[in-house]
Image (cartoon, rainbow, N blue to C red):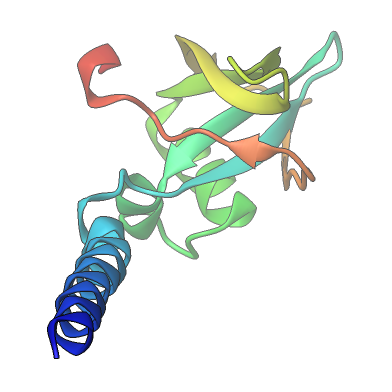
Length: 128
């Protein structure tokens, strides 16, 4: 009887731990940082990769590269985070915010979506 009670306690403890783990996995996305979309900005001289948060992108007409281009032409300039590849603490490559830059509208400017197989880090609120 003592053996059966010991198994029941282990089962209950294991079940409780499993529920706690599943709950933290479900709740975590609610606290996750805002997703970032990457875009390549191409000029006559160079090209860079910028990141725009979902919230900022939602405020632009079209919510895509065309929306960024339209806003840049309408306002004449805008700020964005330049992204670059770096190694994570685990040694994996990832796209991370480098520094905030200013973009100025020019005739030779082109904005296009930028796809990457790497993990894209969110813009840290502390950096804003």
